[in-house]
Length: 158
Image (cartoon, rainbow, N blue to C red):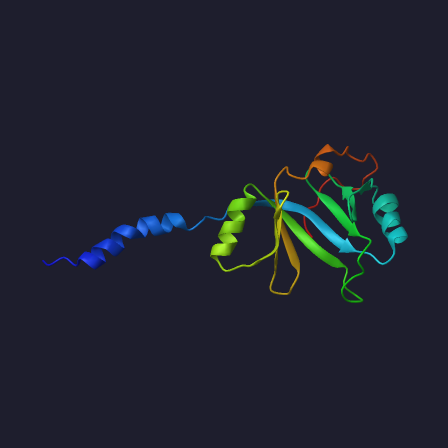
């Protein structure tokens, strides 16, 4: 039997190629939902008074911690890109945000928001921003005390 050196080299390199492809780390849950508002007072009334969450001020948005790893973000500026659009982003937690970014890049998913402070974002097929967050990277939320009057302590879907 005659051996083909090219075929043998290709077969021997398959395990190495398989190891180079990053595996997808688990997505462990919902991190946050980000919404636009055109009426900040009404947003505060709903998220603060009605739902019972305590507002934390961040650079350009309001954060309403739900628990130590989940929160709601409200953008008071800029205005929504279209009149009836209120969803700005959804976010999910992962155990390894760097590896997830490599996995998505290997599958031709372009990064919209570069990795910074344990988060990066991509666009879904409908153009919505989807953010991936390294678990336990959001310090403001991790330090927030649970609101005693909150109607819920967990976000299970967005």
